[in-house]
Image: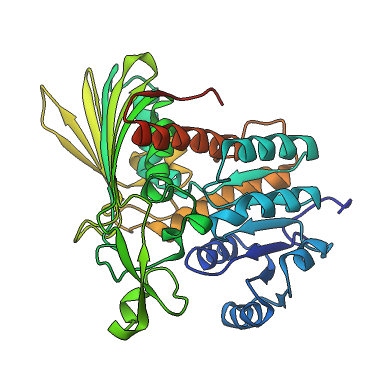
Length: 390
């Protein structure tokens, strides 16, 4: 651990290989980084996944992976309730940490991780990878340069349909695994992080309304991976009471008196994975849809509206930095992992952790936990709730 880290000697371990873990592995490999080993829920699953993914080491436990001196960075793609204990253990073992969101299931825990990462002088990140679309970076430049004028309104939605039917199931539906927030914590947090990143404005207070569309769902009698529930047969289920939200609408008061509204739901037929935002400002507006990620709508009052297609030659330097292909060559969800990993490991290998990172860190993850706690309290108490200072 004392020798200078280089791309050649850096060893990376991944915990969790369900839906999102392999996306981390792919993003790392596309940057020429060495994924040395993985840990899973049990040794047999770890061996099988290591074989499928071509990873040389399958650890018998997470603790065994942390004890490996050749592992310098740990990527946590485990269920939500494990993020805090795993991140804490990894930091205390001297590892750098990349964690899936949420960073923790309480702001007390996430605050501790921010403090501990600073004390241990370890690079840290939370995987709000959706920031890394080129046209999201372009939107940030347009807003923060003042080109659009004064921001008036921020609004949008994040809609999916993968939990539309009462037979759809995933561990995120179980509060003891996914936390007491579901749709808001799982996908709403991505929207909130994105618009905060683009505008530079934090949320001051919230008013939230939740609904559980399916109070009882059919839980598979055997484990299933994310998005694979439709393969089961009717006799494979048991009834399970649901307490987390399928739907949420949230009124938002940002800094500078800017109002906003967000709708989040995972029961919207036909919406496969649609994050949409629109920002209306005094001179122009912008809108973006994650299902058409290479298009940014720019709206005007006194001239024709525009569709900016992703083309590195037409983008700001910040947006061009996360665009690897020429115009007309689409870049999508897997590319955001590549760009996220590129930024994080460039920072890590530079070794100057006093420098300002250009990726989401534990501090960003902590802010999202605080914001989600305010949203959950608002829905429960049916009133406006101020967002605590991070």
